Length: 69
Image (tube, rainbow, N blue to C red; front, top):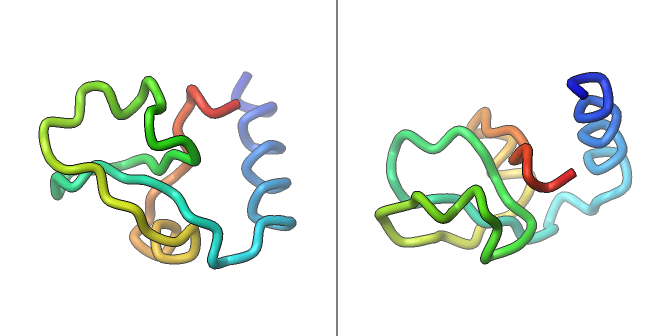
């Protein structure tokens, strides 16, 4: 499973333009980014869901949500 996630992540970061929109939970403890605004992984977010770019999310050290594969 982890190998699949790694390949998926490499694929997405290789072919997605850096200005691709992603969503993150507005709390300071976010660890994941999401391509869908209503992803299951964001259901526990108690703050505002923030739209940002893939590049900015990766620069923050965020990784793709496990529900996105």
